[in-house]
Image 1 (cartoon, rainbow, N blue to C red):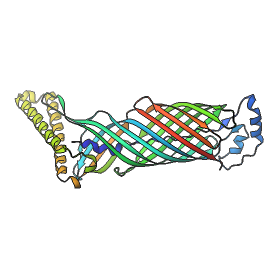
Image 2 (tube, rainbow, N blue to C red):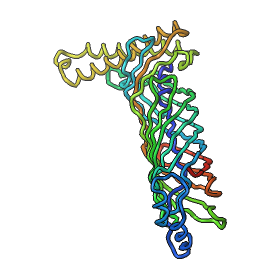
Image 3 (cartoon, helix red, strand yellow):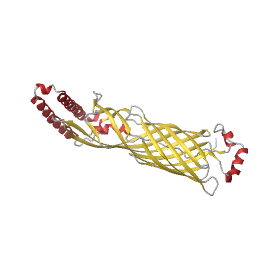
Image 4 (tube, helix red, strand yellow):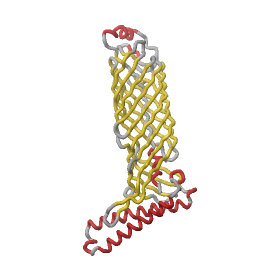
Length: 373
């Protein structure tokens, strides 16, 4: 049985971090005095950002006020799952937290995104996110039940893998400041990933502080920027969905696994009943024994219920469906990032970034074109 595969649709996660590293820079130093003086008298030719001319005339060098980026983002992240409830064919849903244990569940996602942006204010960039991608979820878990001595044993294990197409949309903002080539950016965005298996799009919020330095190259407006920072992601915890049975279960050997599960549940139930019957009335009134007896019966009943529902769904596999709800979260909220950008000129930039440490690995590559607006 591979019933826990039904949770894969809710675990897809594509946290898209697409900030293009340009910023409003305060020009300082004697060697840049000529540039600073020219900015003070030069007429600013664009409508954006608001107060652009005033800021430029105070000695700040502004990037072009609008841009369009194309980015590819990939990540592999561990996910923690709880609050799992499962039902079949619109029947009752059963809470499986007590009997299902997850080992290592991961979500691998890749997305190609388009990001239009504008500098609304000299130190504030706002942008939109539009993307298409795929997600692969790998689940390792098992069903555990207790015996008469309250020793829990695994009666079935599962290794599942599922793929889905995703559509992502969202928006973000990035306050920045730069002085003499050094800069600080506080990027944050919200996005929704739409998937047919979910009742509603999955929400995520990303916060990415970055601290960097830009090094000028001999040609005008050509430079290389490098940075370090953090990547924090929050995803909506509650997820509900409805999935066709045939999309999430491998029917090969499924009936045999269900039958073996029934046998092991019956075996453990017999052990629990025999143990209880051998206790004296005084021992049966002992709170510790009552708790042990109730826990064992509750877990064995849950395992029996889900096996019975699954057994019934197998007989009508072509028309069966799985309903579920769960809560999910990343194993680690934060990871470390390093990145670099090559600016060919004020119009064209190439960017790469890698994230690591913790339970999440990610890579981003992007091309950006900027223009005045």
